[in-house]
Image 1 (tube, rainbow, N blue to C red):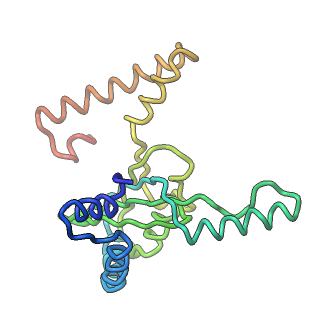
Image 2: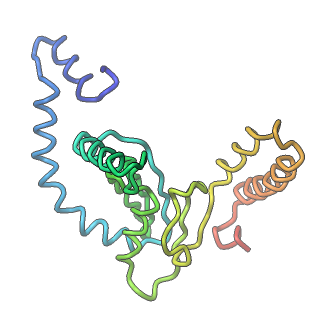
Length: 203
């Protein structure tokens, strides 16, 4: 329990002789969060105009959604299906977007995965802007419904790690991929040492 921030803070308060239950802290965060949520829409709109984004998911437990998931599973089983068609996974998506000289960091927790959340952001993008770079690993959950709207940049570190893990199973194929990737990392290191501008590195 001490791994949870508010539980850890409650335990610390108790050691100091001034108990502060974690439930009280959650109540205060909820009250403050409702006020802070008013900046979400304008910040999201600004982030939609960015030129580069990084999006990723991590698992999260949302009690209200877990109750809904049980209802979805029960309804599916009543129709003789073991798995409901509706999405039941819960994710916290982190969206890091570069807008001019400033970074914008957005977090969203729901049943939507990273790809769906980025697509929602891109739907607010002004017409006529250049395609933004979209950085992520190659998991299906990062895919967009409109892939043509971005320049996709898959994470080579994830790809190399996966090939290294599969090297014993498919040694020849993995060595070919790892050899090609090593050239990319060598070029990147050289460009950093010189150093070169982003445009020169792409040239």
